[in-house]
Image (cartoon, rainbow, N blue to C red; front, side, top):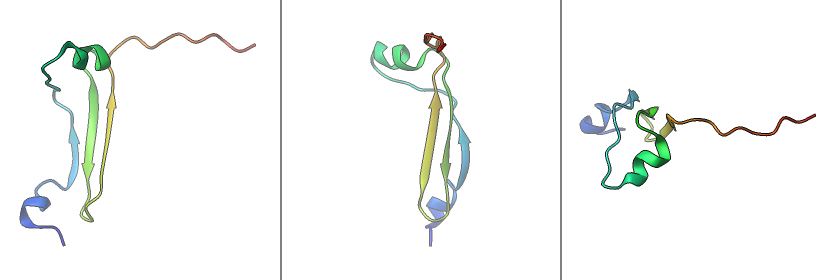
Length: 62
C-alpha cells in the first residue's frame, strides 16, 4: 500500500523543463525536449523523453 506521500505522485506527469550544469544536457536533448513520467499505485515508474533536435537522415533501402 503506498504511503500518503507516494499517493500524491500516482499518475502521469508532463516534462516541463530539464536543468543541468553542463552544455551536454542541451546537446543531448535539444533546447525544448518533451516527455512524460508515470507512477502507478504498485510502485512502478516509467519515463519517456523525446529530444527536440533534428533527426538523423538514414539511407533509403532499395
